[in-house]
Image (cartoon, rainbow, N blue to C red; front, side, top):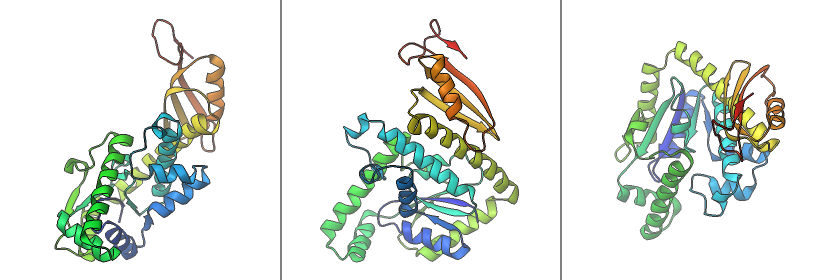
Length: 278
């Protein structure tokens, strides 16, 4: 097995396939419940968890820092969960967040609209008209979520290793297809490489969260990368005092050295003629 991300149209067997895949091989199933519990522990309010979960935020919510904090926490959670080994991740933009991680299998599940309407109507015990509204709204929300948060085209087949039309397949058969793909492409060496990449990505998100959202240090355009026990910070700040605060905040567990490339600029905007690097 490997790390598998499942992107799905509503009514295309997404949850059923993910659960079948995880159950067959003892892989952890990372869904909304897992993510929501961890977001709550990180201090993300129930209101924001609901407002941002696989949907585009409203106009006023988009004007706050809550969106950036949500995304930062979501990335940290998924990277940390994946660090623990074989897992199946359902939605949450995981096909985008893991696109640079070696050995990750990204799957998209689709089916004709009429098939999906019928499935949802039967599952939810509702009529076809209501099922159509639910399916269409959910697909719009998921597409808007990926576009807004990750600037990604949710429906693009180039994002995935495999796009499966589930119209004439059942979840067990689909899980078998995905398993065969993983077994053919993910070697032990790739798995080890994946662990290293994920550990660095998880640490980077943890450092970013500590600086921007726990300590509320005003660093503009902050980017954090980690390589083992070293974290590199780039971005723009108002003063050397802010740089020192960011440096101290970045010294989380597992980080022993900070390479600070923060620039001092005016009003948080980088200007080569009026800024300097510390």
